[in-house]
Image (cartoon, rainbow, N blue to C red; front, side, top):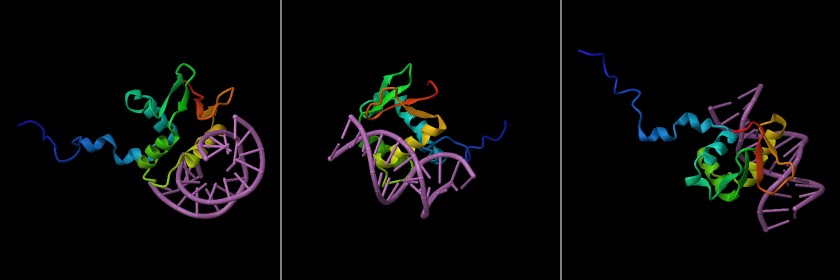
Length: 111
DNA sequence: GAGCAGGAGATCC
DNA sequence: GGATCTCCTGCTC
Protein backbone atom coordinates (compact mmCIF):
# COMPACT_ATOMS: atom_id res chain seq x y z
CA UNK A 1 0.00 0.00 0.00
CA UNK A 2 0.98 3.65 -0.06
CA UNK A 3 2.53 5.53 2.80
CA UNK A 4 0.47 6.04 5.96
CA UNK A 5 -1.71 9.10 5.66
CA UNK A 6 -1.13 10.33 9.19
CA UNK A 7 -4.53 12.02 9.27
CA UNK A 8 -4.60 12.09 13.01
CA UNK A 9 -1.76 14.59 13.36
CA UNK A 10 -1.13 17.66 11.28
CA UNK A 11 -4.55 17.97 9.72
CA UNK A 12 -5.31 21.64 9.15
CA UNK A 13 -8.46 22.65 10.91
CA UNK A 14 -10.56 25.83 10.72
CA UNK A 15 -9.18 26.67 14.13
CA UNK A 16 -5.77 27.07 12.51
CA UNK A 17 -6.86 30.53 11.38
CA UNK A 18 -5.81 31.68 14.83
CA UNK A 19 -3.34 29.06 16.03
CA UNK A 20 -1.85 29.25 19.45
CA UNK A 21 1.53 30.39 18.24
CA UNK A 22 0.07 33.54 16.68
CA UNK A 23 -0.93 34.61 20.17
CA UNK A 24 2.74 35.57 20.43
CA UNK A 25 2.40 37.83 17.40
CA UNK A 26 4.08 41.21 17.68
CA UNK A 27 2.02 44.35 17.67
CA UNK A 28 3.56 45.72 14.48
CA UNK A 29 2.77 42.44 12.72
CA UNK A 30 -0.78 42.54 13.96
CA UNK A 31 -1.25 46.08 12.63
CA UNK A 32 0.10 45.07 9.23
CA UNK A 33 -2.24 42.11 9.30
CA UNK A 34 -5.24 44.39 9.69
CA UNK A 35 -3.95 46.79 7.04
CA UNK A 36 -3.62 43.87 4.65
CA UNK A 37 -7.37 43.27 4.81
CA UNK A 38 -9.04 46.62 4.14
CA UNK A 39 -12.28 44.83 3.26
CA UNK A 40 -12.47 43.73 6.86
CA UNK A 41 -10.67 46.45 8.82
CA UNK A 42 -10.49 49.74 6.89
CA UNK A 43 -13.22 51.06 9.13
CA UNK A 44 -10.83 50.97 12.10
CA UNK A 45 -7.36 51.19 10.50
CA UNK A 46 -6.29 52.13 6.96
CA UNK A 47 -3.43 53.41 4.84
CA UNK A 48 -3.04 57.14 4.43
CA UNK A 49 -0.06 56.74 2.12
CA UNK A 50 0.69 53.14 1.28
CA UNK A 51 3.94 54.05 -0.52
CA UNK A 52 5.31 55.72 2.58
CA UNK A 53 3.70 53.11 4.83
CA UNK A 54 1.75 55.80 6.66
CA UNK A 55 -1.41 54.58 8.28
CA UNK A 56 -4.15 55.96 10.46
CA UNK A 57 -6.06 54.34 13.25
CA UNK A 58 -9.63 55.39 12.55
CA UNK A 59 -11.18 53.67 15.54
CA UNK A 60 -8.75 53.42 18.44
CA UNK A 61 -11.25 51.62 20.65
CA UNK A 62 -11.87 48.92 18.05
CA UNK A 63 -8.21 48.34 17.18
CA UNK A 64 -7.36 48.04 20.88
CA UNK A 65 -10.27 45.65 21.34
CA UNK A 66 -9.06 43.42 18.50
CA UNK A 67 -5.51 43.51 19.88
CA UNK A 68 -6.80 42.53 23.30
CA UNK A 69 -8.69 39.60 21.82
CA UNK A 70 -5.62 38.42 19.91
CA UNK A 71 -3.40 38.61 22.97
CA UNK A 72 -6.01 37.41 25.41
CA UNK A 73 -5.83 40.73 27.21
CA UNK A 74 -9.39 41.79 27.99
CA UNK A 75 -8.17 44.95 29.73
CA UNK A 76 -6.36 46.20 26.64
CA UNK A 77 -7.12 49.74 25.53
CA UNK A 78 -5.62 52.33 23.18
CA UNK A 79 -3.74 53.99 26.03
CA UNK A 80 -1.71 50.83 26.54
CA UNK A 81 -1.58 49.82 22.88
CA UNK A 82 -0.16 53.22 21.97
CA UNK A 83 2.43 52.91 24.74
CA UNK A 84 3.63 49.72 23.06
CA UNK A 85 3.77 51.52 19.71
CA UNK A 86 5.92 54.22 21.35
CA UNK A 87 8.37 51.52 22.39
CA UNK A 88 8.93 51.00 18.67
CA UNK A 89 10.33 54.51 18.21
CA UNK A 90 13.71 53.64 19.69
CA UNK A 91 13.68 50.28 17.92
CA UNK A 92 13.07 51.89 14.56
CA UNK A 93 10.02 49.83 13.68
CA UNK A 94 7.33 52.49 13.74
CA UNK A 95 7.65 56.23 13.98
CA UNK A 96 5.48 59.31 14.00
CA UNK A 97 5.16 61.13 10.68
CA UNK A 98 7.16 64.24 9.83
CA UNK A 99 4.21 66.44 10.64
CA UNK A 100 2.72 64.66 13.61
CA UNK A 101 -0.97 63.90 13.34
CA UNK A 102 -3.21 62.27 15.89
CA UNK A 103 -3.61 58.52 15.41
CA UNK A 104 -1.26 58.57 12.41
CA UNK A 105 1.92 56.46 12.40
CA UNK A 106 4.44 55.24 9.87
CA UNK A 107 6.33 52.00 9.46
CA UNK A 108 10.01 52.81 9.23
CA UNK A 109 10.62 49.90 6.87
CA UNK A 110 8.46 50.26 3.73
CA UNK A 111 5.68 47.71 3.51
C1' DG B 1 -11.59 64.84 26.44
C1' DA B 2 -8.53 62.12 23.71
C1' DG B 3 -3.70 61.58 22.20
C1' DC B 4 1.21 61.78 22.88
C1' DA B 5 5.94 61.12 25.17
C1' DG B 6 8.49 58.17 28.32
C1' DG B 7 9.97 56.32 32.98
C1' DA B 8 9.37 52.28 35.76
C1' DG B 9 7.83 47.96 37.85
C1' DA B 10 5.13 43.73 36.72
C1' DT B 11 4.15 39.99 33.81
C1' DC B 12 4.12 36.55 30.16
C1' DC B 13 6.43 33.57 26.93
C1' DG C 1 15.46 38.38 28.64
C1' DG C 2 12.83 40.57 25.23
C1' DA C 3 8.16 42.16 24.33
C1' DT C 4 4.62 43.79 26.03
C1' DC C 5 1.32 45.09 29.91
C1' DT C 6 0.18 48.13 33.44
C1' DC C 7 0.38 52.45 35.74
C1' DC C 8 1.52 57.03 36.08
C1' DT C 9 3.00 62.12 35.39
C1' DG C 10 3.16 65.84 32.50
C1' DC C 11 2.25 67.97 28.04
C1' DT C 12 -0.34 68.95 23.66
C1' DC C 13 -4.04 69.02 20.40
